[in-house]
Image (tube, rainbow, N blue to C red; front, side, top):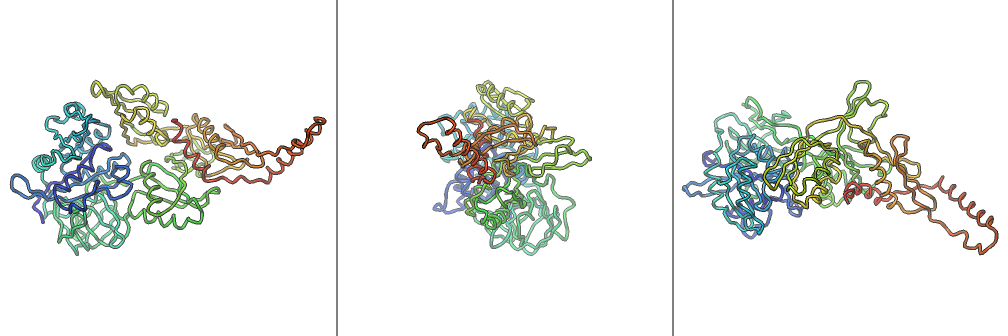
Length: 604
């Protein structure tokens, strides 16, 4: 049991790719909690995808012992947080479990969009913020300019910012001392009622759910009965311990400590991030504030490439759900693609990660339908319904009004790209609400725009338009009225349900034309003419034709009257017409993938 006066709980927050995980690696190396032979880059990122992409998807924690210059031994609990906007709720819970934060800023990039939003989150939770200027070894590093940005943009004292290089290990000792001196000790007492915050969890196939907690007050020990307050379930603690890369067993956890508990919990979905754990016999009066159900914002259907792999896909999703409580799925089926699942994701990155994990960890090759958001429809009979699947779209004559989710998008960019980025956002139905010069080189713009427009190629175009210099952050701000239409695609007169999409009505023609063009290139030629049509209701708004493979029936006519030739051509035409009536068009997987790719390639 540690004295709370010698515990420091802190997190590292930053924009994507500013060096959080590398800095965490240096802390682990200095604390010598792991053998040097086992050290590797991104120690706290234990998924292959995290390592390859250089991103953190799940927050991790680690306990670091440190002998300070004042002669005392301190326990430093580092909570590593995800940097991507999709996981902002997890970031907020990780921040709430700490008393201080290291705000890492890249010396060559300066302050970016998520630097600001993460800092505001830390300020909301009353954290002591230590600005850290990282990557000072880079040729493009400008430490003094970054200090000025910290002063002007963040309103923090730039002169107190510590200049470090996480890669080279420069300035890490000074950072350790600053953590001990500047971050306050935890305030909770071990003799108060037990109150612990769940900031994450992961699944162990042998022992069930490992719950990551921060004890605010009281204590937890083996054999104690605990209650999870949001779902009102009780469990008995089987093991408590600390994170030292590996799980290190301890007798008990007391106020101020960060650690884990095992209590025979079978599924991760029973353990909700942000929930409060208390003693079942003498509970605390009220749960910790800020808990909310994480709601998916992006929806897509997943189908196996081969319909016989359905059971394997089902098993893969069940196992993935054990580790990722924010993934939701339901059974779905389509005439074209067979049986599959309708899934909800936190955002596009979350969708990509799930798809990649299914392919790598469970050897599943899958098709995803075009991502969609959840629309709210008010019907003429007074009912309100939420739909995210085009197949659930009711008869337009029953709809009184439609609404779609809007976001507040914050873009920080160098001045030179302002015009192009405004054009991009306005073209995506964005409305500019603010325009602030952060300094003579950089501008912060805020737009309100539909979330549906961000799903399709927006992020790629933002990066290519600004040559990678613009940064982007967003939050969902509610529903606004929308002109909605269901766009159907017919192949040879037959509707293909898996290609249907819900679109903004004025942009429907453009979307339909692009999808028809893509399908024309992806559908192989048959013996008969194939019509590809995009329609809203019974009104066809776009059409392309796949021309038939034709035999040259005039080859044997080496002369003679034109009527002979015409007779042969008419005979061929009749045959093609009969063939078209009985002919079926098989859509290959490439055709579905081509439609999805239109979303990414519109920019090109």
